[in-house]
Image (cartoon, rainbow, N blue to C red; front, side):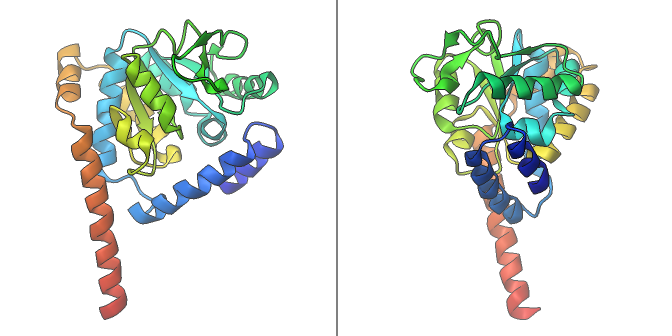
Amino acid sequence: MRERLVEAFREGIVVPQGLIAHGRGECFDYLIGEETIGPAVEAIRAAVAALLTARHPVISVNGNTAALAAEHIPRLAEATGALIEVNLFYRTRERAEKIAELLRRHGARRVLGVDDATARIPGLEHPRGMVSPEGIYKADVVLLALEDGDRTEALRRMGKLVIAIDLNPLSRTAQKADITIVDNVVRAMPLLVKTAEEMRKWPREKLLEVLEGYDNRRVLAEVIRYIGERLNRLAESLLHG
């Protein structure tokens, strides 16, 4: 993963701040054992249910997400009927186009957010606030990965259901999203695709049951409890192993 990010940095897809952000995420990946845990699986099922029952779902893609999961994003869009939109904090047209081209090479038919980011999310003055009027601005459900908390809150204020992929269960993004998948994006994205390909055959009523039965606060609490118990086991093994 580090090599993929470094290469993407050299290609102008990832910015230096993205490398720092990845390091923070690695820390929490170690804490959960570098595996997809039960609460993440539950969140993935709820996320897929939300995407499949949405009127206008959108997958928001930044540099790190593109570098690490570009091959899965078009498949997830295809399986859920979601649109794909590039959205960047450190935005240049050249960088947005490079990310869009990477996604197209992996099968994306249409990528928003390059030349059509003409609408603004209320309350966000930095470039990440600029979105496509046909994409994130219009969306009822938005999937974000490796995101910042202020944008998550702004999208919630607009009435959108926000799905976040975030390894840090304590981050503002994780705490403010409607559905938080606490997992590494390289594991979460292919599992989202697999789950979507299975669940898209379900009746709408069954999908809504999954979504209505989901409690993000409980899931985040389970993640934090899992980390605490795992660290206690590791400490005991050091003392008595």
